Length: 82
Length: 520
Image (tube, rainbow over all chains, first blue to last red; front, side):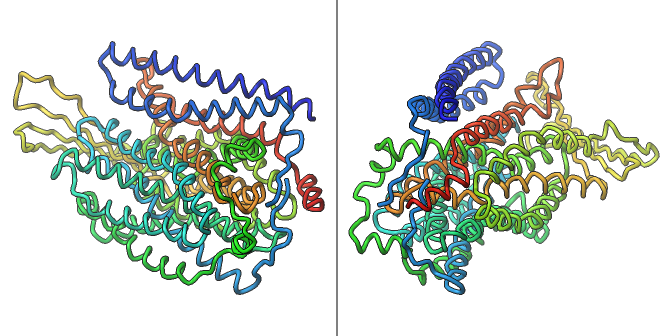
């Protein structure tokens, strides 16, 4: 089970990076299309200007989670009581 | 996972119920304050945002709704830190005051037609204050109750706090419906929508009075007495790997999925029924109110059950059921209101045509068609065509509004489908307060649990209607002008599925929880 946890860590790192890439590329495409067609420009921009700054740091957090998993940090969860 | 209260004296019996009541009433009112805005997003859009494009206006209001959610993690940081430094009691008293004042003020802001762009700017600011306050409230209330409750019954007692979000939503729907009934639809859209916001002031005053009488959490008092209060809760929570990794696990392995299940069941369902299916305003709210009322006790059932079989099994079970059944549920919901698949009673069709001049001197032709169907469904189509007085300008597109009144049987089936979705909510949300509280030590608990909770619920969950509506609008193409009504579901399904896998792999099971408790 621990090795599965560690190997899956790669998956979370990859997923986080993939989502960031997809967000930027999709935003670029949609905004360019909206500007070109002069249709719903404000709506499209507003949507992506909200989504990208919010989800990019969270996806980087997913990458960090994956990194910790790969390093075996989740083999056992220990919390020290103060 | 170690529990952190192995040596504390829990409050029992009547004292504990008083603690729960006092905490729950305040939290419920905060949720009420937060939700009345969301429940009235379409009206607020017309009052505070430039008119012209209804979708733009609706998205603008949802963006403000989203702003309320996105700011919540910041509230979690600000008030979580305060709660771990000065105590739970005064911190969540402060959040209550902030929430009450901002909600009351929303009810008093003049509309866009009176003060122009200042109106949406003020609304946005007040909405941000609301989000900030809510970000600090929940963690405090959950921590406060958990720190009073016996360790082995934390799931059950904190589940009372979990009911407040749904009951707050219920209360907001109830007050909106009652106000609308009392003042009439036109007056409600014009000024009556302000009443539920203003009512909040009385509810908050009552709650502040109750909370002032409460004592500090026994666990916090104990660590304060021993001089063990954290000097820098933010640093301890997020700059130390040992705790940060648990924060990340809580977010990606539990709260992220819980957030989307919650907001799909309660909010996207409402948006879908009203906007996509076209079901009438009051009927939509009645069926939601009934479903919420019937399902609320299950928060306590699953909270208590999680004390016996573990939080993980119940939360992940609810998540799995949700992601597997969302599409069939929404397909059935759409079918119940889809008049194209029903048999029309032609002789009962009524058409009414009227024309009038608007203030700009344009002629507005309105055609109202009411159709009845054999199963008892009624459909009203209102088509407005505007012929501009200034012929040099391009003619605007005709506007069509569709309203469906469900038959009695369809109404109850629709209610059952919403009930099932909220039942999933009770599974994922009922045990989560106890789950989060148990993940973190007392001295940094308020800060550590608040952030993943509000990222999961505020951002992943709170943006569900916004993202799902955007996906639906984006699916409308020239070849498919009505769009794919189910495309919005991919967002909660994918997020829920990722969270389920992470939770299944990494969250400790009940067996491990017990082992750690024994070792503690």
